[in-house]
Image (cartoon, rainbow, N blue to C red; front, side, top):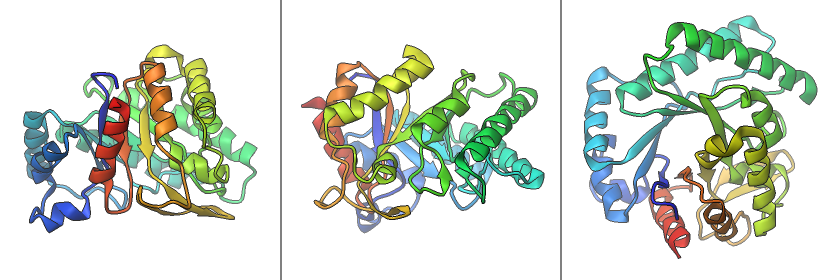
Length: 285
């Protein structure tokens, strides 16, 4: 495990609340008990946080040296043909960057979008064009006033844009963007294909080829076991599940072999801190 690899949960485990904690600014104390040093805050249903709370979170996480990332609202869709929806998508990303900065975070995870009655080729063409428009907007509105890194996520349903190839095609030209590779989602989209080191290595090799060493080594990772069906992703599971994958051990070997320093976020259902601790132990073994 690289010394600067960051690993932690998305949100708070059930045990966080069972221990009497109530608010996210209390998470650093809880995470230190697990030896974790990253945390992802989700604004999936919309951004609603006061500046006062953002500052409280920033102070707590900074003092504990826990790196915070945020997840933008789930409603982003760069593949849409509707100009109003694209404008809203741009707004969600811009506001996510601003609130992340207030919370002391740099990385913002963003969903690419959905097909919306288009072919994959049409949807991807729109997504590439519209994502370029977003980056032009961010250059005008933010420039270098905020240090941010967008992390575009691979998705897990067939009706969505978000295979690794599609994500890499969207982000390749832009230095302030990297991939958020959700290996659980990829496993859903490929009906359980992630089993061996070679399966993971092919994805990592492709990422290095398209993004270059620096961007590839510092990717954002989401990891969890996920149930899937005919349409892809159904629901997130815990590491105790034995029916669905993927398993983390072969990925850990590949990450170590390539001397990577990603941020790894565990999205297990209700046991994200516990399973993140397990992943850290595997990386160190």
